[in-house]
Image (cartoon, rainbow, N blue to C red; front, side):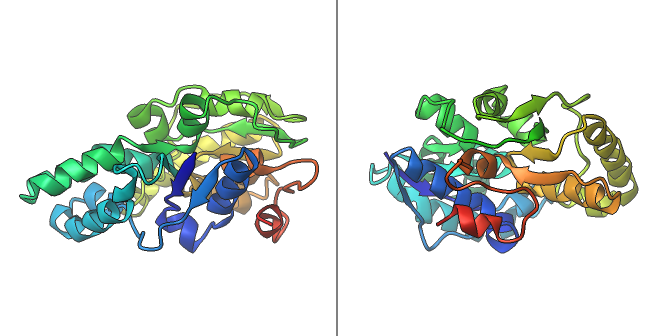
Length: 264
């Protein structure tokens, strides 16, 4: 398959190891990955904060950039984020429809129909759970809110993790509880966010895991900050990073430059 990568703002600016790992993983599975140069934000931050008018040019840019997938130039668009995939699938057409742009709204729907969060693409579209990964570490998984509730990815990420050679997957208590990030929610409701984070950090530490993984670096950033400030030693890693790790090119949790090594 020919698959376009939507890297997401936060990954592009702060956590490039996630989209790099997606490329490494998909190419190892025999697929071609393309990176549309015109991509920017999907508009989620604007929409979730109530700035629908301001979201219009951002959403229009995303739809124009990824429109080739609806024409068959690419087979799919992959996004290493449940929240961004949710925004593309459930918000973009609405934003354009409200702005009086019905043709562009239909184009947004067409793009969304071919857009998948990473675990969806692997399990539902490519039909794989064992991607040939090796990661000899004790890992716990946090199901992020948008992937769990908006996309309904279910146990797909855990099925992928269970198939990783050497990986010990330990259950996370109260896993479905929100970590407290919620984008601008963490800024507008800092005390509530901090309390939710404290609960999540406590359950992660109780697992005895070396690594916390999830499908969104935004949530991992939030939880990872709490884990770091508490001196817990637990390392946050995106699901794609774990799935990209092999015996020949291992990803080592917390080692500087690990993302660059695995992307070779």
